[in-house]
Image 1 (cartoon, rainbow, N blue to C red):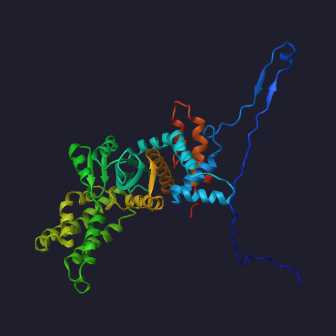
Image 2 (cartoon, helix red, strand yellow; image 1 turned 120 degrees about the vertical axis):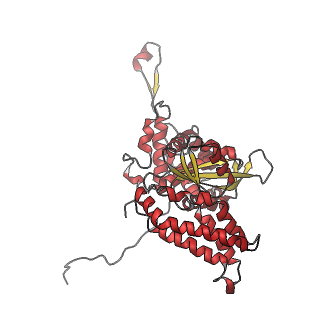
Image 3 (cartoon, rainbow, N blue to C red; image 1 turned 30 degrees about the horizontal axis):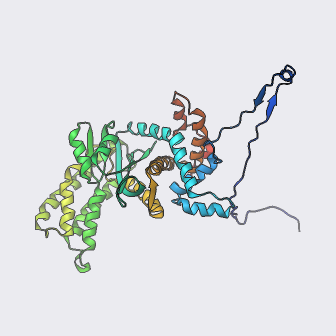
Amino acid sequence: MEPVGTKVVRTEVIYHKPYLERIEYVAKTHRCPNACKEDETIFLRDKCKPALIKGSYVSSGLAVHVMYYKYFMACPLYRQEQDFLHLGAKISRATMSNWVIQCADRYLAVFYDYLHEHLYDYHVIQANETPCLVNKDGRDAGSKSYMWVYRTGKMYKYKPIVIYDYQRTRKSDHTREFLKDFKGICVTDGYQVYHSIEKERDDLTIAGCWAHARHRLDEALKATPRHKQRSCTANKTLKMIQAIYREEKKLSNLSQAERYEHRQLTVKPLVEAYFAWVHKVEPNVLANSKTHKGLQYSINQEQYLKVFLEDGEVPMDNNTAEQLIRGFCIGKKNWVMIDAISGTKASAIAYSIAETAKANNLKPYEYFKYLLTVIPEHLDDIDRSFMDKLLPWSDELPSECRKPVK
């Protein structure tokens, strides 16, 4: 038989076990022979590549590996400690924690602040928060701290930004401080803090979340006996919200102006009919029942739930910010609590950069590594314009940072 051609019949993917490599940097010392003849000795030593963290053996790749697995893969440090042992290296969780804090504080914080400033360039942002436990924050055990997340509005498909912000309490002062330079519309749940801040300012508008209104009525429906669900008030009200969502979904690919026009024609009549119905049936529903509470939520939030109708850039709900908080909560369940405030602030910085990279279709690991390679080289620069080249949408990012276009 003679070969007449080839054909690929199957593909196989092979996994290669990761490994750690130790590199030693050797500096040669030189002396001047002429100076020695004159009873003087002059020595010169090679300049060595500076360490990422002074006195530490950690490389940018190793530091990024730790951050990537903790903040993107939700793998706590004690599990990574065990994994490194299997690779033949004893790296304690305390050491890894110090690496994360040092890298965040020395290098990534300046870029985090730069992203924060860019967030204010947008007309619409979204916000949410979740409690977390910090072991050493000077308060009683079990005291709640909070991780807040702010991101550019869902309708902005280009250049999205995600910022996490740690605070020890849920007081309005923290949100007021974060939003002091923002002028526009902030989409949130029904937390009263946002509403009180809106009353203090003329350049800030709060928009409500229809997903929260739907969720409360969905809970009421589930609490209703099955044989009564079809005809109950909660089900009828939910169907009206679903009709609004269906109509809104048709507008997802339109421009801001087109979306506004179509909302006025097709969505607004459904919203007005919904609130007319809610006001009509609410007095006849059993007080303090789940259905009554669900209807009351819509009535109390009516002003905020209607904001999206008047601006094509405002999303109908806050689900995008909710999903970002959910990612933090997955990690939170794995490590339960954060040891110290410095670790929580480092977490906020790392999460911000990881989620911003993800939203911009970048590879978080490669992007982190690139930042920890470039930023140390410019740390002493007074001019911060070099960071424009590091932004997730910069054309000057190396190709390995980008995910392949499908």
